[in-house]
Length: 487
Image (cartoon, rainbow, N blue to C red; front, side, top):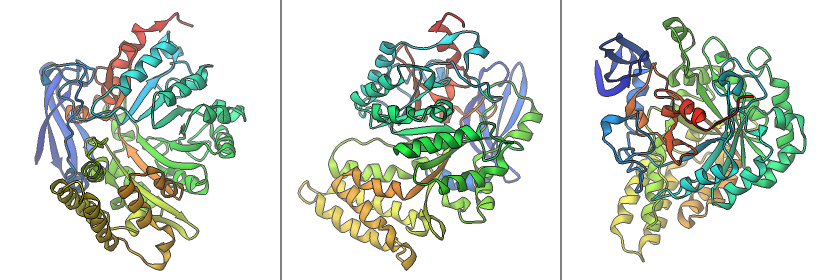
């Protein structure tokens, strides 16, 4: 059954092709035919029912008021930066600080030994990239993640972190393999003092069979815990390699809840050449990953506890209507990722769905936003207070959950616009999410022009994640253009 039409790429020559999303035998496929290389059909999502449920959260954003390029939509994805047809602003910016690395992992496309040259932008080039991100309109990019390669290879990393904070980024993150954090007990303190808020730690499993650097990871977690530097675990999940340890990774996070703020699973993206056998054996889609979370946590976290990224847009709409100020909106494509929060209690894990009727909450807040839009300035606060009081009925206030006090926390945040109120919420909660970045086999240009994770480059451009790393692969173009002498 045909579900929608889009555009994709030939996985051989990368020509842009008309494509169709089909449902067949309960699964979702993306089909296209290249005039030169013939027909292709690849798995897109493993669960047609979940695909349709997430489709209900299809929200298209308005993009940038100051796009970098004015072009024809037919040129996508071969003519980036962010253009007048891109529908999302930058929620999270990535900046590659280097392509050097102190490891040589099996699944990695980002080290100088493989490239044969060194990419490492200067401090002033980095300043320029950060300034471009902060000049976005209507909302400056709120968060930046420094990546690589291995960004801790740079001696000036603390200076770069300080610069990001000085320029006003609300969230400053570091994607790292953790080797230096493990080897130097004082390094975590140095980075935190410089302005780092979250370490995104590459963490593929809880045993040496799935995670060869597990001992380093344990030490890195310990060193971050000592200084109160929060961690998000980032496992690359590959079917038949480490998908049997998904539950174990979540358990590890709950056992270290004082320092680990979340787990962000990334199903493998085949950025290099792959044959059909590789794809059939190792491809894991978001629904399959959620199935494994449900089974490997013995049902403590259910597949239906997860929601697509755009589900939170009604909250942004509410704050915008209440304050009259433009808000960052999470208008990513509904099939790019999924997430939930769970509370870690002595008796076990409690997903937020057990505390609040999430669907009813979002429906109520949408209605409240419409009321606010019609109300005068003086009555806005009273409308908001009365509406939020009604939300109380959405919370399931049994004895077990009363101590979480979610109602008070959300009420403070929404009424006063004081996001410090969320600290206690995040402190007691564990974020569990997944983002499935595309490759040349499941490439959907409809997802590209909704992307909200953008790479900044030394030439002043912003590139959507899945065109930077696959498709046209801007990463190679940028690194070569700005490369230094080969090591």
